[in-house]
Length: 289
Image 1 (tube, one colour):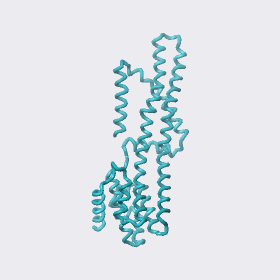
Image 2 (cartoon, rainbow, N blue to C red; image 1 turned 180 degrees about the vertical axis):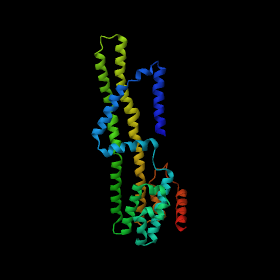
Image 3 (cartoon, rainbow, N blue to C red; image 1 turned 90 degrees about the vertical axis):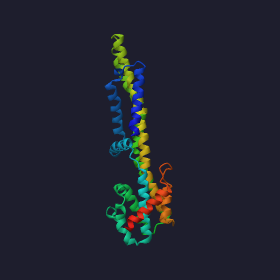
């Protein structure tokens, strides 16, 4: 929502100020200049990136616009789920836990948290490392190194689209100059025309430079930054899982282990101790029921 509001503010301030200075909006309507700039930008984006990144660009853009990041309730849910899982792992045998880990979609534990279950990557991450904990032969520092490597790999994959859109944004001012040069070339071919006609052609050419800079710093640059912020927050929830499981492997009780995970949440989004305690009590009650 804030992304849309920001674009509205940019547009209103830009065009409103231009009109108040005495400018005519019709002068800025040069569709072929925009086709040159955006067409070349999209073309170079297609040339420079693999198909997977190109497809992911649309998904990442929608995530940025909708601000599809974990909410406060999502952090509480994942911590409560981990609390129940770790408590069950501590009190039950390996064979009793295997059904929950191997088939989470059929597990009463996971079904109690449908939003977590709907996140297939997160569910797989939790189950994979809980399975390693159940095996019991791996040492905590080995599991921690493995989790960190997977999270880093995940982050690199998630941010490839950010790097691609950033590269495109950085190229837009130069593409604006290309469009302006083509407009000047057209204007040079009309030197025999009246000054009014020549002035209009030169003005149209300069719109290319204006549009290239605007698209770069007013649209695609901020979009790339928003994508990075959203993707980093989406990966951060995996760090919470890592901190919780490693604390449990190092001997912490489930209630203490989830506190390790809670501390991995950004301070302004972090559930309070009371909220987490209530969530674990509710989780224990659900399981008992």
